[in-house]
Image (cartoon, rainbow, N blue to C red; front, side, top):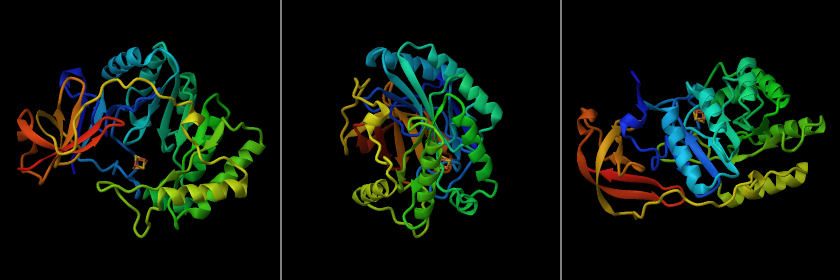
Length: 344
Ligand code: SF4
């Protein structure tokens, strides 16, 4: 399969808000979430966004992102801003990553820059660069300390757990904080989660502080368009938090992390849309999406919207530039993410 890459810059006229899989997500807090690319070096069996498998990928121009971030901070206020990189993919594959970080630090008000990574591309050289560019925190997805289990979950024979653990040790001896973020798959990695808790406790016993090495267990979520583990059913949020409570008691460790633990607080929402589910709106299709049935519509210079076709068409590019009437099928007001459908 030949994969296309779409470069999202100012000239592309593709807006940076409104679409879930790239750009900027504003949830009305001091955190600005960035998704600068959709490429991933893994194709995990459980990936709820199906990364590593897109027919078309997206890379956002760093200057386009910077311009948007400066505008956002102007509105939110030049204080206590966290930039959090959480792409549908692997951030260390972003070509201009370190240049972007350096530019971000020049913006008044940014106090934290954190990233999510699967950690596989870490090495001594990259870690030195991460330290030099003063990354504040790295969240590493690590679901098991067992080599076979990790290989299975990530569907990757070359996933080298020892190498990853060595790199975590190197990170711990820098100024960067580390957060281990395992996903708990009930019935699949229950023991592994406890092993990871013990590992974090051991590191703390060795003298690393609770801020230096954190653990943030995540709930297994499934989505219609995501990949899922066979035979594993996600549990309810209630069950998940009960499990965390009993592990907290068993190991005497805080596992339920909330906004306060990360200094997250409410701030002005930059822009919002007043669309409701089932509204019919007219828009221009500005780009293809990740798959044949997915497009990006343009609502205005700021906002894009994901548009899903009811069936794939033979020449998907033919629809680009067309004005169409769509129906809103999902409107998430918290983060201003919109999805519409279009029947052909
Ligand atoms: S879970 Fe993370 S590392 Fe795995 S495929 Fe998805 S984005 Fe990539």
